[in-house]
Amino acid sequence: MNPFELSEQICDAKTKALLPKYDLVRGEQFSVWDYSGCTQTIDNGNKNFFLEVKNREVSSTAYDDTTFLEVEKLNGLTAVANQYDADIFYLVFYTDCAYVFNLRKIPITDVKISQMNLVYKSKADLGTKDKLIMELPFSAGYKKKLK
Image (cartoon, rainbow, N blue to C red; front, side, top):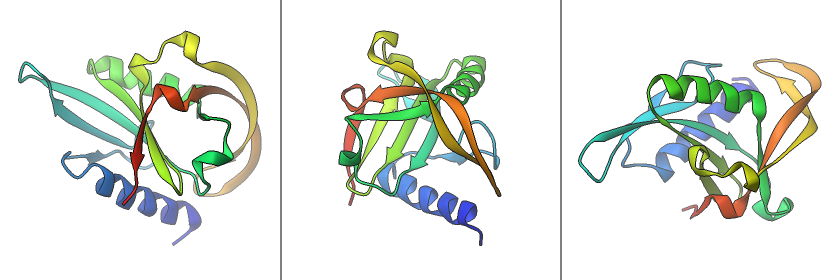
């Protein structure tokens, strides 16, 4: 098993442990979303959602009260979610906790767009690449304790 596959397996286990009540469907490998699902709304209707998951092997305190999402990833998630009138969630695991963001509900004034040189890889390490990122303040998400 290569490092990418191992990382995906770890994310799967952590996501299912954190969200056991949801019947999550895994996206295709390398798709724009990691999971999709459906929640019951207050009027007993169903609301579709797409979920992007990241596993960061550091403490949340290693960051200045923010996390980041690649703008390209957000654009892809938005395009898919718009087809299904779905919510978009971003779940970020740290060693000490997890944060869940409903990307549809974060005001643009709460985020900062910047550029970051990131590792560019999929199954193989392809070096680094400058990418636009959206910095999300932890205060815009929900903090979840890990068991």
